[in-house]
Amino acid sequence: MTTRAPAPPPAEAVFPALGTTAVLLVTDPKALPAAEGVLRAELAAVDRACSRFRPDSELTRVNLNAGRPTTVSERFAEALQAALRAARLTDGAVDPTVGRAMTALGYDRTFAALRPEDARPLPAAVPAPGWRRIVFDPRSRRLRLPPYTHLDLGATAKALTADRAARRASEAAGCGVLVSLGGDLAVAGPAPDGGWRIALADDHARPGGDHGPAVAVTGGALATSGLRVRTWHRAGRTLHHIVDPATGEPATPVWRTVTVAAATCVDANTASTAAVVLGDTAVDWLRGTALPARLVGLDGRPVCVGGWPPDSASATEVASGDPR
Image (cartoon, rainbow, N blue to C red; front, side, top):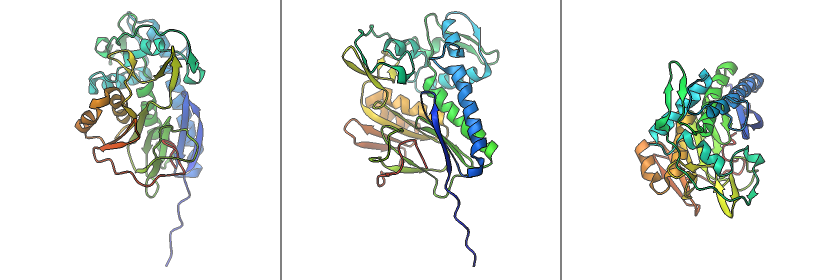
């Protein structure tokens, strides 16, 4: 009687990208260079198209042209359509027109370059102009923003990149692939035996130690949004990076983290971000989406909806969004 040799453990590449950490895993170690080449190309393309912090990005050009029609590239159009769909599905809780609000709060440069303590006064908060005022023709790719409106495509563009990169890297490598960008992850191709093991935590980049419960992912995507990592102080206030478009202020803290599973990383990220913004009404809203989700309150207590499995034993080997 013969026995099948155990499969080799997934090979991994980890490197900084888009102001966060990119993690790539492949089930065939020999395919890692091909998959990494695809991922790096996708990251470079979305940075050129959608970065708020590059003076030469397409997003910078679009924002400078607010009030005037402009033609955008196919890559930018894809990211914009993902953002507009997120706004429609969440009734504006996730809105790409929060760019000026982000800048007013002080998030006008990469997070690593932010001053953690800023004594400058905060300007009066102003609601976002609103995604419904954007005029966009997908066929001609002609776009006109309302005057003085700045887009921020960050969350949905990053999730879209995870989806694209996982799919294309799996095709190029011919094996199972997982792509995680700042804890938002997508998988494609055959998963390893038992699935990709993901441990949940407030900070995807936290080193080994006190990690949260683990889940197994065999397909689709997982995204986590939270208030604990990207925070800074200005004018005596603690601020975070998830803005409520209705007020122009950081979303009222109700949930420490929200993790959602969906068919795509864009949908998972849309729902997790919306839940942070919606606060007290997030649980009922998530139940309406039928997406599996785990919300953690400020007191650390989890609430699971949509068939999310009960918490298992803590996983001590992996940080949130840093799967093995």
